[in-house]
Image 1 (tube, rainbow, N blue to C red):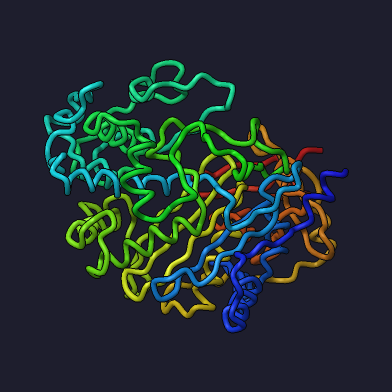
Image 2: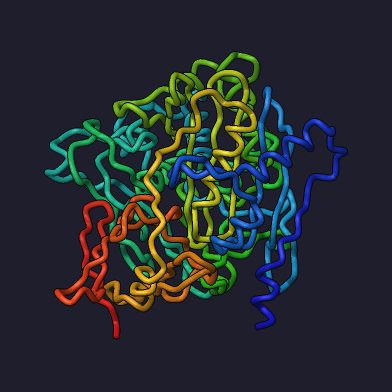
Amino acid sequence: MKQLIILFLFPFAVSCQTIDPVIQQKINAVENSLAPSIVFGDTIPKMNIEKRMKETSIQGLSIAVIRDYKIEWAKGYGWADVEEKRKVTTDTRFQAASISKSINSMGVLKLIELGKLDPDADINNYLTSWKFPYDSLSKNKKISIYNLLSHTAGLDIHGFPGYEKKDSLPSLQQILDGKRPANTKAVRSLFEPGTKFKYSGGGTTISQLILTNVTNSNYADWMQKNVLEPLGMTNSSYQQPPTVTNNLATGYYENGKQVTGKYHVYPEQAAAGLWTTPTDLAKYIIECQLALEGRSKKVLSQTMMKKRLTPYIDSSAALGVFIENRKGQLYFNHNGGNEAFLCTSYGSMQGGNGVVIMVNGENFAVVGELLNSVALVYDWKGFYSSTFRKNVIVPKDTLQQLVGNFLLVKDTLSISFCGTDLCIRQNGQPAAGYKMFFSDNSNFSIREVSNAFFTVVKNAAGKVEALQLKQGTANLRLPKIE
């Protein structure tokens, strides 16, 4: 019970500099204008960040906002570690997860500019400690560096679960061959390279091995000296396990429990291993924006940065980033998700705007809503768009029939009243539950999982006997547990 009391306290920490009153007004507006992409009813709700963190079981959050090629403000919310009563500050490091791939691409492309790599050559020309085993699925076509960075190499292994601190860590070669103690399968071809997009953290891991083979260096050390330090990312590191541990956030599941050992370890450093802060990632975004305009070249030249931010084969996947067109305004983006860590990063291709948001939790809803809030407050034209769904008031006696438990494969979905509304939770989490929004008396959805649609199933006597869940390609019957 004591822990629950702690979970509902949300201290704030802002960077130590004096805040201009105009900027403070914007901060206040961002904190109170969280907006969902799915709107139930006719009015876009403006939600408070502290309230949404509680509702989505997010313990800690950190944000940095970029305006006119500068970090306008950065702030931390909640707990970096609940048990230690350690608050999130702007110096708290979070796991960047797949945003690690974006910074990795800066290093690999730097080697190309140095003449160490031919981006169109066979990757096996540079792999000395391991060779990629081509087979018939690749149809005699070779994989290039550009293929690896743009996820067009035709490879499998989407992502990595990481390892507990007590686990033995595999070498890169063991990871790529799927041999113990690696906990993922071998990285192999699925189809001919250079034909289409298929996200592959496995491909990024091959690029990590290429960098170490070509430079004959430790990956984390080389990236620190040649990428992170030039970018001014002084509070960041690819070291795995991390060697600096006093300012790391602890990962938390939706049930409030921390990850065993506080966080997972990722020897797949290029794909998922960067520890950093929104402030440091904002420095990276700003450098990309300035280099694109020929105003800086701390790591890459203008020519290479333009290449990096241009979709390659796929319409949106560039070299280490994704390009989004928001009603005519272009942004480069990457999201990330490790064990109990989530994050997002956006930089505009023009005008020098951007944002980085990182959390030590499992629910992406507050991240997306806060992103929308920044776009609204800072007037990013065309960025925020909402889908409106019908929302009707259902009689209380009808709602009462839904109260109870439903079997979702091996999990339990529980429905109960939260005030005058109904809320749903999975295996008792999150504690507050997710509010259910009804399009009619028999169909509902929830804001936090916008692609999940529920239909109430009744028997001939009119008694609720199940829920029908449609989510993506899944169509499941959830029987009511008596």
